[in-house]
Image 1: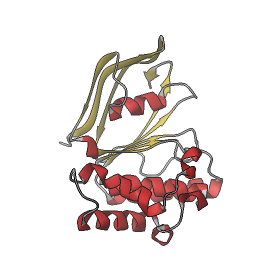
Image 2: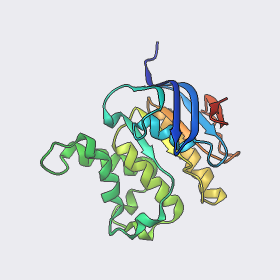
Image 3: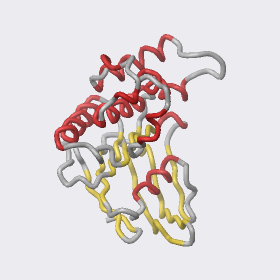
Image 4: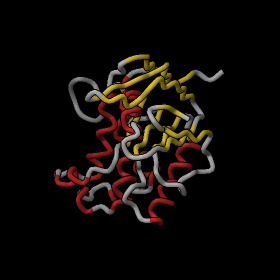
Length: 213
């Protein structure tokens, strides 16, 4: 039997006096590829943040197997971050932070994980490029590489194809499918895109009126 990587048991969340999530129960196990849809403001990002431990439920419980490094998160695209003077490899290397000792920089194994992540998403040739020079599709590949360098067992993605053109959306979903099929992990993909259903998807859920359907 596959051990659940994340378990939400009757989770409710109230923010600013509004109940965003109500009695949500969900298990994510290795080999799950779950798509989550819902209208703007339905609470999809709140649900992801609950799983990550960034928001404490008002009721119910969230349990996650392993430590902080077991869950990787690709947030919604933040264009403001492009002002930072970072190279692509710098951002991808951030994914190794949970594995680093208190003192010291990247070790050989960390550098190897970063190189592998860059190759997996197909942007090894962009490693030395400033992030401000990336296209939208390249930015999302970089964010996925950052998470893959972390070597997570649970992958959470919040609208990763938003603001991408049709060709870039299709390319990213195909890439995500290859990553999932090559790695034993669980994936929870939040999306509005009706055409972003990869063939490896195992469940489709909708968040509506605080409940999961």
